[in-house]
Image 1 (cartoon, rainbow, N blue to C red):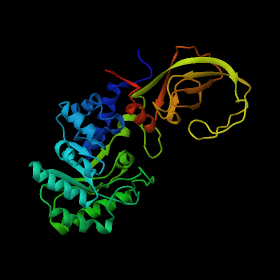
Image 2 (cartoon, rainbow, N blue to C red; image 1 turned 180 degrees about the horizontal axis):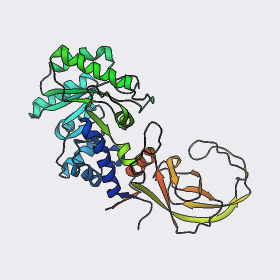
Image 3 (cartoon, helix red, strand yellow; image 1 turned 90 degrees about the vertical axis):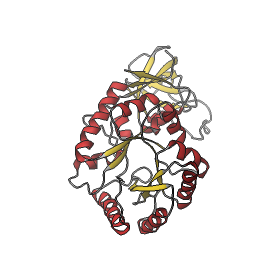
Image 4 (spheres, rainbow, N blue to C red; image 1 turned 120 degrees about the vertical axis):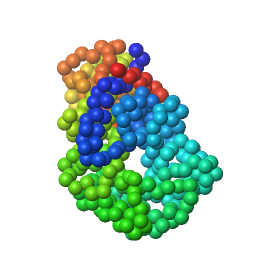
Length: 353
């Protein structure tokens, strides 16, 4: 089988989706399954769709286009504010999108009128994480402007926390969002379809809270894919953390000094490395590198240490086991590694059913 590869256990993925649905459904929360970490994988999107997930969400319109053209009959949400250069495709392939800029919404309005295809809008409010979002004191002004545009329909508001500054989705933050939604609906005589409380970082809040307020929608990706709390990276009980397995092949296995010899300068990635004095050690090279995966974000399942990676090599150290050329080693991945592995054309994707 071709290496490097990433094996995806679709049965474990299905169980994770169902576990999340079992938590959300009784609370009246719908969720969009986020596919951006897996580059809009059709096989994975099919699992979400077949289990009755509300909608499929991605940050890149090219992935949404791919899923829709593959025949997946779902609602599609673009979760990154559209670029002006992609407005035509957004209206054609996405049913609704998260937005923060009036000029972008105006462009969506014009394209929707031109094509006769309405587009739904969710306005994102910045509650302190300082990535995307309209400031709370500007949201009423924005709502008023959007309501005067034709071709687009304002179906809700939402927020995004934790992704940039690590701001946690606390009860206080979620209550603030609910209160803003209530005030807007009261002032403009609206009934929002969706009040979107954020991403996978909100999972533990949903699990523990007795006060959801008006929040009825989430955008969930990493929790389902990796089974971990995104605020702490700790495993979530009841979820599989091994849906994905990265496999790489050994191409060299030798005993070498633990420290390099010669004058040390910057390496290929502009870093000046340092190495512990361990004497002669057993080292191996694997045919995988930074062009394939974030080598700092993979965790070996066997008793080896990762010393570092270059563009197309991973250097490992083994104290107790002799590693042979041709041997395959398995790794777990965190979110950064998963993103890069699925983006890389050099990593084969193998789906296990």
